[in-house]
Length: 432
Image (cartoon, rainbow, N blue to C red; front, side, top):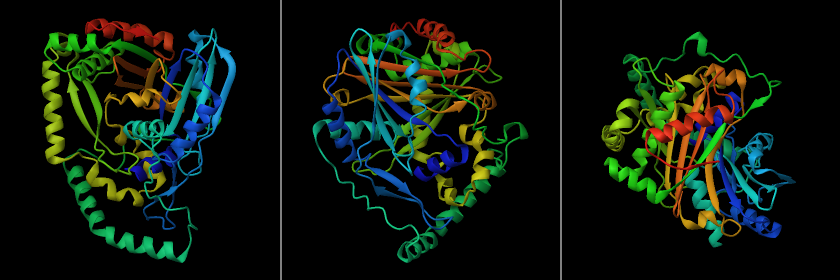
């Protein structure tokens, strides 16, 4: 999965970042920020990817105990212009191979206060790994994950080792080819999408576009009570909100249903993977979700049970990743996203309290994706809609990232739809 994430990054010229933002009512000490950065480099984030010398070889993680750079935006920014910060962050280099794989930024706010932001390449870590790394750093627990030091890529020893590993992996490769053949026979996956989906190449001169982000902060207890009144879990209520939002912006299939795609963490104790994730897909009826989300909860539980019992569709194909050329990855981007108009819904769940204390107690934490798109790319893939939610203490933070070509291209245009979807589900929150 990690190598697949990296291959997609190189093929498409862009890749998602995990953005974690902390809000502070006052200034934070520069020494505390530097210490936080140093502690992060001693944990799970202290690594980079080193390619195999073989074109079909497995890449590997190597140690990189170098603190991530800190960018200081010292000119105070009015709070109402804070969304502009995301556009500035798009220009900061984050690269899982060449480094830095992650970095910090601090933005001063008018009237006092500041924002601390961490950007992490999704190849390096998913949100659960990021939260573990932050928790270890705050607690002062350096954790040696056993990553080897970088070595000469073309050394005879590495060539021999990767050749042996490639031979040992051949049975898995044959199994993956058989799985791909079965999928093709069932009509679930072709090798090439239609010509309208084919990527013609990234225009590197086209300016980056930030998919608008609308943050919502809710009282976790009130959200839980509303969910209980409807007979569902609070996570189901967030999924129903996502379905209603997708319905309101027109991100539905021909039958009016919403395709919810949700990552499921597979992280275990001592896990060194960057992306310990699988995913499930649930087709949601937005009208039913509004009146009775219990059906959505049943479908979610059934999909989760099927995942645990039968696995997902993607994992059996992962042994093929080293053999897929970049041009084919570009052609298969739409297949990776999923046909139709998928709606990403990341239910991160409750995070440890220490995650909210990178440089002392923060007043608010928000987690969201950040990716450097262009307007033509967003038009080609039909826009995006991604909802991420997490709970820290008594605050439930939900971030909505959405873009609809020629319809919703700014935060001001997205915000009314978010308000209406919240009202549909009887949710109250502060929209930032």
